[in-house]
Image 1 (cartoon, rainbow, N blue to C red):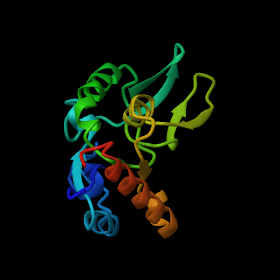
Image 2: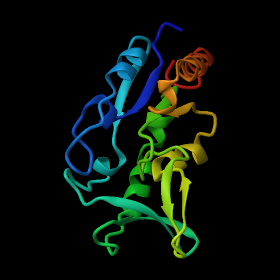
Image 3: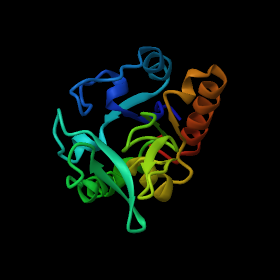
Length: 173
């Protein structure tokens, strides 16, 4: 394949000011390492769903047998349906990429690292809403977060999974 792999990339990791507080979590070393071999496509589920920048901070809550995204300061603020709708609108894009690099611990993007609050006060870890959507609908799509990819061995393994997928033509390539 002549085309470079395509990676969906949490926009905040690319240095875009899309976080709830109007900031970013730029990861320049990771951006450079992956940008050398892949096209990096920014996305932010919360901004994409129209929650605004800045926006009220949110957290995941187990509620009535489902995971809901609710406001930290205003528990009545529940943008879950808006974020789910945005995720569904990304299906065509997801079918054209070779992997995802997402923000750890994010209520949208965390991969097994997003805090989930239970009614009894317990806190466990789960996937953020977008990461859960990707896992459910594109289970073979390589996904990793910036914390995992700090490990050079994990970074190399992720890069190889992405390149393999690109060679097989599963994504854009």
